[in-house]
Image 1 (cartoon, rainbow, N blue to C red):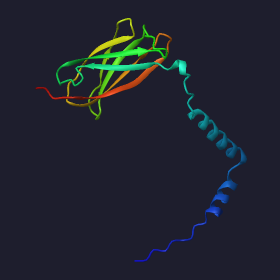
Image 2 (image 1 turned 180 degrees about the vertical axis):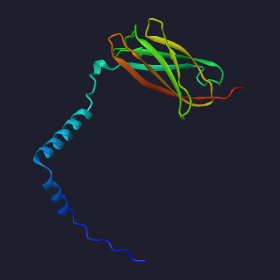
Image 3 (image 1 turned 90 degrees about the vertical axis):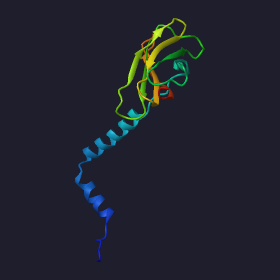
Image 4 (image 1 turned 30 degrees about the horizontal axis):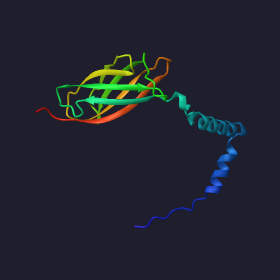
Length: 152
C-alpha cells in the first residue's frame, strides 16, 4: 500500500486567506488579542494586603466517624490578629463524587476561628478556609491535606 501526499504550500494558502480578510477584521483580531493579554495579567497584591492563615487540626490524624477541631489563625502581615471575619472551613475529598463538608467557623476574638469538621470517609481530604475579612475582601486558601484513617 502506497500513500502519496500532495505538496503543502503554507505561504500560498496563508496569503490567499489573508487577502480575503478585510483590513477591519485584521485590526479587530489584533485588538482582541491585545485585550485578552491585558485581561489575563493579574495585578499582584501589595505586601500590606497579604493575610497569613494557619491551620491546626486536633487530632492531627482524624478517624472516620469522629469530629476534628479545625482551628484557623488569621493574622495580618504585622502579625496582628484579624478579628471580625466571617470564615468557613471547607473539607473535600481528593477524588470526585463526595459532597464537601462546609462548616461555619466561630470567631474567638483573638484571630482564632474554630469549626468542628466531621469526616465520613477514610482517605485523603483537602482542607481550605474561605470567608470575608472585616474590610470586605474575600479570602479562599487551601491550607492542608490530611489523611483520615478508618475507624478502629
